[in-house]
Image 1 (cartoon, rainbow, N blue to C red):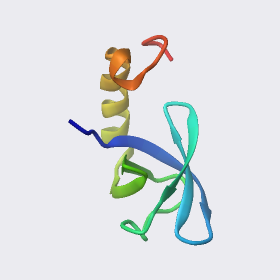
Image 2: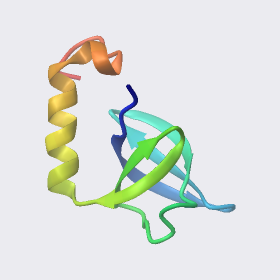
Image 3: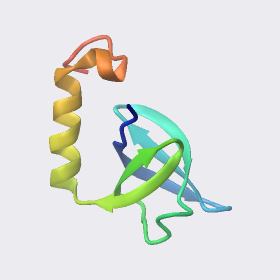
Image 4: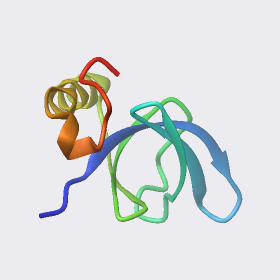
Length: 80
């Protein structure tokens, strides 16, 4: 099973790329599917693509759930 993970857009780059923060880790992703995404927005990331822009409350609730199951996110601690 694959999951989409919420990430905060930290920077927009050339070529429809963005740098995002996913649980404290910076990653480069494609925003081809979400051209409306702006710096500061939360997006759902799946397979290196932002697939949807979501509101901050939804993103934070999902992040909090992921932190309850650190083995799903390969986290060392649930308080990360």
